[in-house]
Length: 111
Image (cartoon, rainbow, N blue to C red; front, top):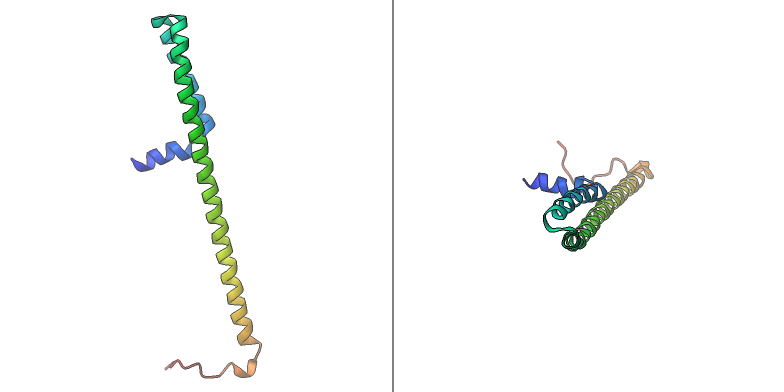
């Protein structure tokens, strides 16, 4: 169930979610006009529209925050890989720069 909720929140773009909500809000407006009359239906739909717009704004910010977090994680991972590669190159260069020391005893037994 958590994967489905996560997909619905983050997997579907907020614009598409807003469009679906607007379609549902339009259908609700038509039903309310038939049941309550035009004036009262417009008041109710306006109130629901304000709540809906706040929800859409929250969803947009939530998706943007997740995208920013993923991008930061990717940058951090790339930086760690580059640091590891630099350290590996430095270690390799240190050992290959003095060929006369390649056979030195490093203190480990290798039988």
